[in-house]
Image (tube, rainbow, N blue to C red; front, side, top):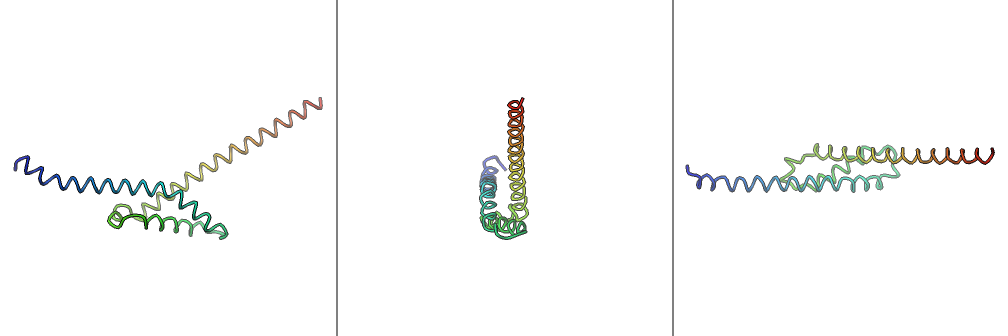
Length: 123
């Protein structure tokens, strides 16, 4: 088999492979970007429901999974979406904790500064 024949066979295969890879990467990125949006929507939808963490998680996963084109569901499974949603939520939670810690430190610092100012005035 000469190189020209080999290229005629390989080119369609490579085109399909790279096309599928491109679609997978675009869909995966879209899911990651949309996960925050849908987590926020779920928080709003279930704000009056107690202990709704599981319901919110399932709703977000189902909503995102429905965005995946049917042919890509072999590669981007429900389990994959669950991992993306969980890691996104964990990141949001960590960020919120960090911001809360900063706010508490600032509040305590302001209290300490005010107490020191009062002590200086009373001397």
